[in-house]
Length: 89
Image 1: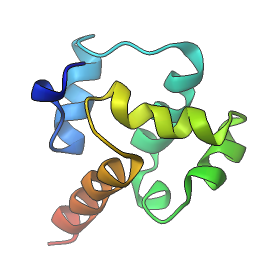
Image 2 (image 1 turned 135 degrees about the vertical axis):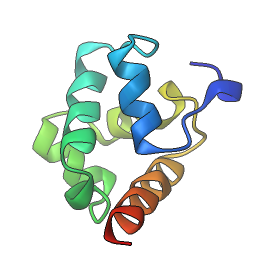
Image 3 (image 1 turned 90 degrees about the vertical axis):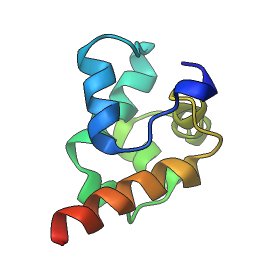
Image 4 (image 1 turned 30 degrees about the vertical axis):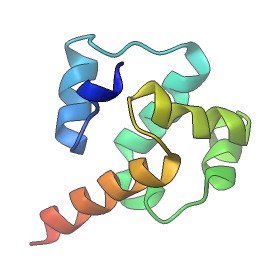
């Protein structure tokens, strides 16, 4: 996915995946599913913790963000934080 089309919300990410605008190699798909299915948990976890649960390397977790058109894993976590905050409001 190109940076100009980067996701801004978790809902946009889910929509793009559902429309198959974003496709994943197997290991990245595992990480993406974990984060998307459990944003309220993933938002508080390190890349290392997510990697361990998904049985992938930390590098794989960090590669997810650029695959989504984001610059860093921290940017992805900011999207998760916004999602959690918006749901609580």
